[in-house]
Image (cartoon, rainbow, N blue to C red; front, side, top):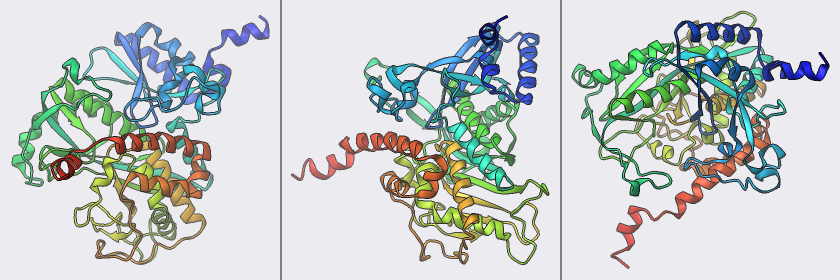
Length: 486
């Protein structure tokens, strides 16, 4: 066999050296599972720039070949804002990206990460696998947020640490009264469904409210556990139809994957029950409360395998932990573009609301941006960043924490004193809008160095397009304020 014939005979994964030994082993196990359990289809999905899963479904008999040779998707998916509108001139030279691979709405490939394979408990005979994305020449797509997060993890590993994160996610579940499927409602984006509550709320953590929501929470719980996600607890939150799920801490890439799969699973499970789950921070519904995503995080020393945030003196955090914390605070305004990437998310930042409004930290204080949990010698010492919204792309959220925390460690920054009265502290205010956050991101060299200037420019262009559409809308407030008066 000639060398050219040999290259043709080998798979895309082999030709470009894309899998580790663990992934090859997982792929073999996946193939056996598909056959032994008579799966019919496998969903191949990748997380896009907004943290939304996109992909294709293939017949089970094709899954092994597709895992190794890829599944093609159009590059225009990477050029879209949250309205699913293409905001780059893809039919011009370079496609608006200055990259020939992005011209003309050509293809890129999803390549499975077989270590993520799961069977969907709510969809009969269906497998599910997360993918990474590559161009046909084998190069990683530079806008792959999963790959960007891997790069942040590698930089952290080079500094001697692994990233550990635990998820605490609030969201709403509503009954769908009108799915808005009339053709007149199929606008771009479509009209939001009309909904009603499944519980009135305002009885935080009461058994009665939990029991009202339990039938659907039980369904979600069983399916999430069957999916293999490390669920820790389920709570009813303060607001109507609001709940919170928390997950055990995980290392590296896994917690971000968990968040991706959890959000998608919850929305699918609920929709099949005639319900609508939303991770929107502040829905425009009477009396509902805002939702947040609190990210618990620490670093694990790769040499000792111990928590690098554990203090050996009277302080709640080690020097490493304090420096990392200071980095989060120092870049909080710019990182908000990733922790709170929607226009709506900034309407959650209000004083005296259990959401932060400035870059401060405190010991076990729920009004601060970063809550320090633990005490001297505590092996579970960690930081709880309360700034994030549940709609955030988890790969970008966590990567932003690593890059800014590392900057604090490298410059040995000090976080200053604990803010015991967080809404009165003299400190840098968090952005009041996405536009303000993007201005801060444009001028932040730490995040530009971490993510790369090209990705920052790409991200800014997509978000600027969303803001432009928002600013062109005539709101109900404007109609009330001016229509009759003038």
